[in-house]
Image 1: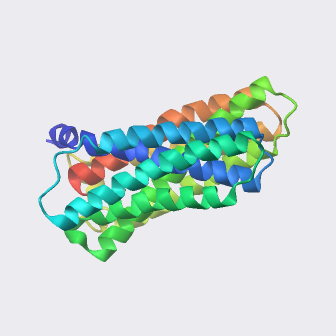
Image 2: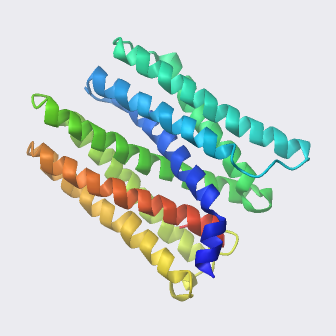
Length: 278
């Protein structure tokens, strides 16, 4: 049954949510520092939150069953956990440097490398049969989930900054919302393509999974609740931010935090529970 299979995958789902949230949040901070006029207080706070998420992801990673005696598997687990710890430390350091007004490009680059390294090792470790095409597809999925979940968290926190600092220009929030909309649109296109091709270890080509019980319900929820609906809401957030209706924009982004998080959970559950890429 799907529920039982999803239950068996809870540890992997938890890891995926926390790790993609950490990686995506840190990437959003770096983008906000170099591509927007976001305030140093906001950027520092968001960097600190990325450090917390990375620390929680590391704790979740150490909760997996004991590693196989195989030396290669043990090295991959150590690499994954080491990269998460490095991301946590670098995100915290970056927050301190941002608070002091610095750009700290080397720290930003190192943090991005640690985040991407975590995803690369995880994709290689959990892709079916260690095939290159499976690794690349899972890596693309993890990067997309990171951009969406971390991006919406960063955008929602930025919306709160306008509520306490109303004189801030609207450009940073508009830009964050546009980036989020673009990421969701790309995810939707990829999901449709993967469904058509039957990507994943148990995928059915030609959109067959959309009518194949019992997983069809979860696939439709992933598409409609996790992608289509937040895509519409993100577009609405752009329009409201342009008119400086920041309370409305923040409320819309709050909704998106929930729907995109739900979509991330569904995507991880479908992959680890059913071998489906959506």
